[in-house]
Length: 377
Image 1 (cartoon, rainbow, N blue to C red):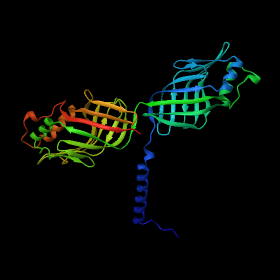
Image 2 (cartoon, helix red, strand yellow):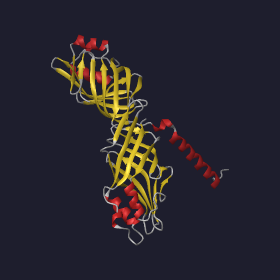
Image 3 (cartoon, rainbow, N blue to C red):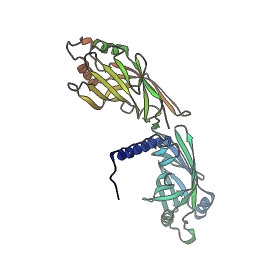
Image 4 (cartoon, rainbow, N blue to C red):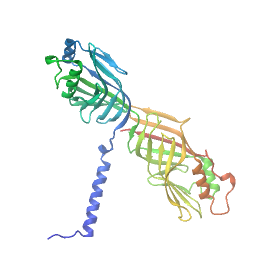
């Protein structure tokens, strides 16, 4: 006889599921992610047996485009891809390629992709896309913000050797055999942006003249400007926000770093504005927040995420340390955008009487100096 679940049972199941999900979210390994790749190299060192076979056939190996061939070494430049530097899982797209030539016949091998997740090498062989080879188990190591990895053997696939042999006109015992070892494979790659771990903090040192404008509008400074947990207020005019994650280029030229908590600004007898979840967008050079303006009505309550400030890196100090995998941005200026200035005036100029014109916020007013130290995975 079956029984319908009671409300208490349902609640218990929901709590258990939520707890399990929370554990998954906070498992350190779950943080790892594949970073987009900016640069790197892939080298194939042709195995002695394969090189001897080519020499006996009279087949020449030459580089194409960005690839250099020196002796047994085929050196390609990485042009893109995604790679998790903690375990080298992902793929690398390489530029150029190489050509196998026999007399007037030639087989270009281009668009070579090394895929560690599938332990395979893909390429376009004489205009046909296919798997060129399979990788033996590889070993990997960290290299600053990036990683390198090496497989001792690349085994040629049946489809690849058939196409190469046919295009070169190889017959009988001269044909290449599937499973033959082409080379080893060594790759090293550096990321365009790194995955930022949820640790450390960002700080905002408030601009004194801007804080004075809030004071002229009826906000008790500094007591009326407070931190929203888990953000803190180390000094009367500065705020500290825990870093929640994100991405960041080693030169701080791209990526978005997310923070938790926020800032609350309360006017005595007037409105309260909360600036929550400050995101530093280094691609657009802006800071975005979610706003909450109360009481609602007359104010709108929750406002979707919007850009409120420009991040000015001129004069800021950016330091990337590959050894510790940390990126530090110190003393970037956060300046008010037009819509943000108008919103602050609209909210804090109420109720009547209107504060003095000199207290009005204008485009370019400084929120303060913004700094952070991000820890890459």
